[in-house]
Amino acid sequence: MEHPSGVNINFILNADTKCTENILMDSPRKYTGYTHVALEVNNAVSALKSVKGLGITITGEVEFEGAKFFFIRDPDSNVIEFHQPASS
Image (cartoon, rainbow, N blue to C red; front, side, top):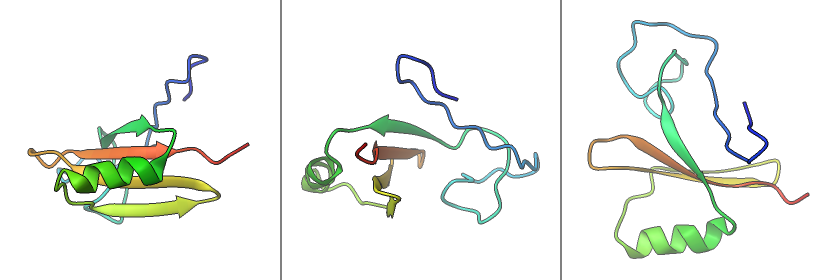
C-alpha cells in the first residue's frame, strides 16, 4: 500500500498466526504480523558504507530489478530495511 506522500506499507497476505519469529528474516514461510521497518534512501551504497562504518552488522543485501536493499537488526533483533528504489 502506498500513500500519495510516498509512505509505503507492505502487508503479508499468506499468513499463519502461529509464528513468533521475525518472518522477514527468520523463516522461509511468510506469516501475518509486523516484520520490519523500511526506510527509503537516495543512495544505498553510501548508506551501507555509513552503517558499516558504525560497526553495525549487515544481515542481508539484495538487488532486485534495479532496486537495492540491505537489512540490519536493532538491539532487540527487530529488522530495519534500507531501500533505494530502481531508477525510473
